[in-house]
Image (cartoon, rainbow, N blue to C red; front, side, top):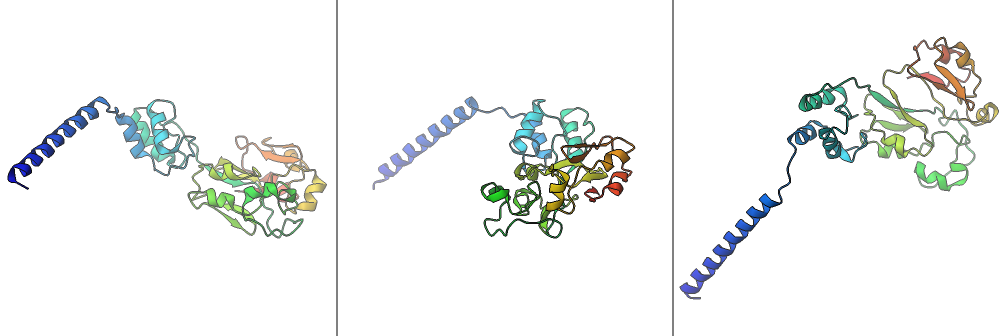
Length: 265
């Protein structure tokens, strides 16, 4: 190739490069997406777990909502009060009070205390139990199945199956609600971290039915109601429930419960 050809090719490449550069520069200015500095700062303050516990599609979704004033500055359950205060400072508002919560499994029917209708050898997944006879092998249709769907869903390693029942590590739990969503029996809920007592049973069967299935099931006897000085306990559908806002933490309900299904948490 002659020197003229080389110079011509170099010139063509140079001109094309300049044209592409100018085109990209103009396009970048024309189609530039404005970045909300507060949104970026809020996103940086969030823990980045993207667990969805706040109700938004990850931390970026929550950051956008907070920046627009559509979500509270302390809406992140993982970050809790410290992150809420940082975001409040960014947004120039008061953080407000935030209550720490933790997941609670309303079942104590482990392998010794509950009975089974049959031996099960299929898929080890709680959500699959809707396709097997009786909704699972346990005699109690409301009890923990113990196959660990909640364990797989928890991004914080805060829940494990122990002797056939899911157990929450309160210190690791960030109250993201993933275990609550995935439990097919709906026996996991979020309760205040400083709650003193809770009913560790979800059965709404009549007493005789419950007693046949489990040694520690609520039979709806009402002794907890009659002995609660704070009127914090009520029985509906043969099942006791504690109003945590009224509960004084005296422990009388747990002491009087004949099945010992009201426990200190």
